Image (tube, rainbow, N blue to C red; front, side, top):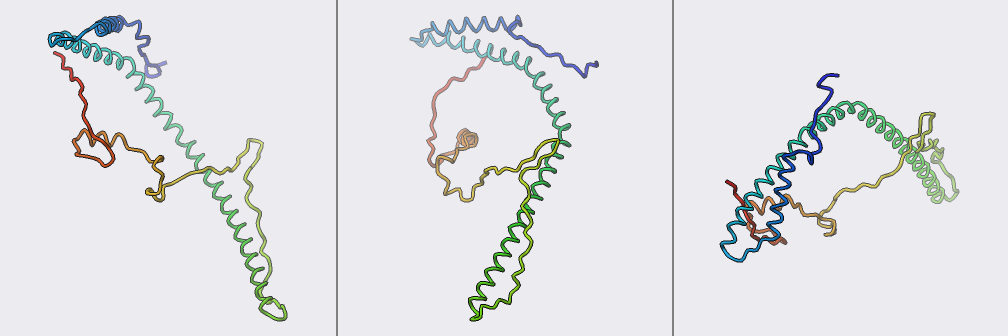
Length: 217
């Protein structure tokens, strides 16, 4: 087995000494935060120092997390991409075969309905002619067309069965008539506009709330 057939990834971050140290530091900072009392302006200074340390620990933990997951994610992506390529011929064979079966069934059903409609039209025309003529004589051709059977909706073979079923689908034909409960706000788009400084959006309140920006040295 070559190196290309295997991948070495790091697991069990809880056993990583560096991660353990970050965790212990985080526990201390959590304890300090729980016990902290900010009653004066001077109390803000140690709190600011702790926020700087917290930011560094958060960044360090995120870096370690990426060290663990990135190789795995890249490996999974490579595998998925490979199998997607390998699966393309069989997916295409499946799509083509399904399409041809459905097209045949739909065409057979169309011919069946069309023949029945023509036969009904012939009968109706003959009835109208008979009613029009005092003698009841009919001169129109009333020979009925052969009505081909509808295509089978289930096909059984020794290998398996294929069955046709109807599935419900939808499409928007008039958005203005769609009930409000089925309309959704594009949160991502609205957020981008608000952050970009848009003045206002009808039906949406744009407001500001304070947060803290932490810069570490």
